[in-house]
Image 1: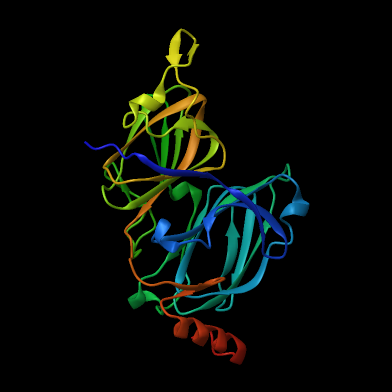
Image 2: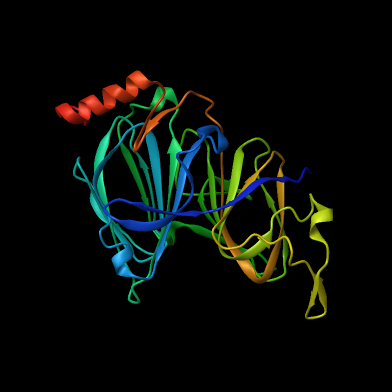
Length: 300
């Protein structure tokens, strides 16, 4: 067993996208090698409808996959080839844009006005950049949640975990996407593929993400309910943690527990030519895509 050490930590930065949606960007539009095959992760979490109601009106995508996971509220989506529907609390949409699609995503809050979800972008390899667009809309009731004796819960969105397969299939980078809750002051071991690029994104509570691999860093600093407990090296809300290689992640949750996304994928290791919502391999392919947008031949 080899524990994955933390390679880097960073805090999601405020950003504005669409027609004026305020969100926090965990990563994106930097060096695509950092999270290959993933390109961007946005956390759109607001309790003020003015911060999200303008939504994401009609816009194009080509050469990537967009993964939308709704925790609270609703996202209404429509596209240029006739698909439309609503993503409700707990639902997931894995959209393979492939050769090109125009779509819009319009969020609305729950009964309290709260809107919370994530959008992850995954790159496509060169031989799949121009495949036909494809949707996988997954209802919350079709997602398996594994519950452990220690009170932890692991929701499997895509990939295999402990022999259970998530409902999303046929994805080139062989990803794993988990929504994990660990109760307060609990040490948890999560198995991952040794060589896939892996990151965690904390959105509730806090935790130490290299509890076993960095024993010097987990010095005891406080006693809680008669138990010695580290509080110094906790990663809290909106923290992105990137890991080095290894087959396990050892986590010590904070005094209020922790909930986070754990995402991994097989690196594509190809050139990336990227501008906005279009990601190709060469500048020439990128220029061709925008030329097609202008002359009306973008949708195949």
